Amino acid sequence: MEFFEGDLVLVSAANWHVPAQLSPKFNHRYYGPYKVLHNFNGVTYQLQLPSSTRLDDTFHVSLL
Image (cartoon, rainbow, N blue to C red):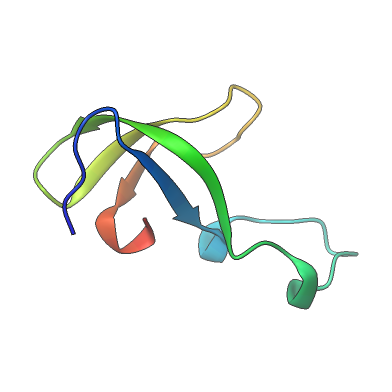
């Protein structure tokens, strides 16, 4: 898939850490939508995440 600057995308929750008391069964599978800020090389994208998020803002296309 290819996304362009300004597109809104969902991010897979596979790499997001959630509190231990929450069951994985009831957690979100995707978070977002987040705005695409930059396409680095066709497979790496920079997203506009909220400031409260403790994640790096670059993601591989397989997680979007």
